[in-house]
Amino acid sequence: MIKIKTLFHDTPLLRPQLQQWERTALEKFKAKITDEERPFPCIPATIGYTKNHIRYGFAGDPRLPSTIDEVAALLSDYTKTSRDYGNYTSLIIFYETPPDLKDTYTVEMFEQLFWQQLSDLCKKDGMDWPNHIPLDPHNPIWEFCFHGEQYFMYCATPAHQNRKSRHFDNFMLAITPRWVLQEFNKHETFAKSIKAKVRKRLENYDSIRIHPDLNSYGNKDNYEWRQYFLRDDDASLSKCPFHSFLKKNVD
Image (cartoon, rainbow, N blue to C red; front, side):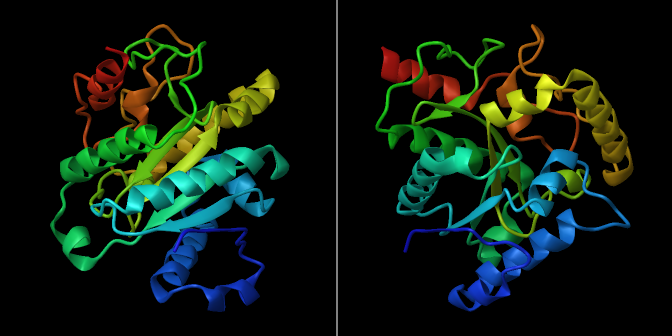
C-alpha cells in the first residue's frame, strides 16, 4: 500500500492508522530531531519539524522490486504539492528494515542499496531530465532530479556508528527540494551563521571529523552526489554509481 501522510508530532490521532514499525520510526525520528541535550546538526531540518513543514512517507523493504514503485509514487505526489508546505519542507521516507537487513548490512552494502534506489527511481520518472542540469554527476552543478524538480538527497542507515548524523534505525531518505535551499540561501548573513552552527554541531554530534566531501552546491570543487551518502569514515567512492545509468540512457 502506497502512503503519503501529513504526520506531525502534534497529531497523535493519525497514528492508529499506522503499522507498528511506522509508528516506531516516527517516534524515533521525533526523539532524534527534538533532542535538546544532543541537538541534531541540521538546524533547517529542526526548524522544518517545529513548523510542521516536513512530510513523511513509508515504503517497503528496499531490496524488493515493488518498493521502488512506492517510493516513486511518494516523491511524485510530494513534487506536485511541496510548495504548499512551507519554506523548510522536506520529504522523509522510512523504509521497512527487517532484522536481517538491519543486522547484516554494512555501510558499504547500504551505499549500494541507496544508489540502486536512485537509479531505479530515475527509471520510474515520467518526465525528461531538466535541460539546465547536466547528466554527468561529475559536473559541479549536477544534482538528482525527479519530475523536473531538483533534489538534495540524504541517506541514513542502521549501520552508521561513527557518523551519528547519518544513523537511523531504519534505512531512511530525507529529500529536500533545491528551491528550499535557494530560499534559505537568499538571506546570506543568516545562512552563513546557520551553516557555521551546523558544522559546530556536527563536530559535537559525530565521533569522527566532518567528512571532507561536505561542500556547497555551485562551488567548482563540489560534487553533490558525494554528499548524498557519507560513509562512516573519510572514504568515498571515486566515481558516482549513478553515472553509468545516465550515460546508458543517453547513449
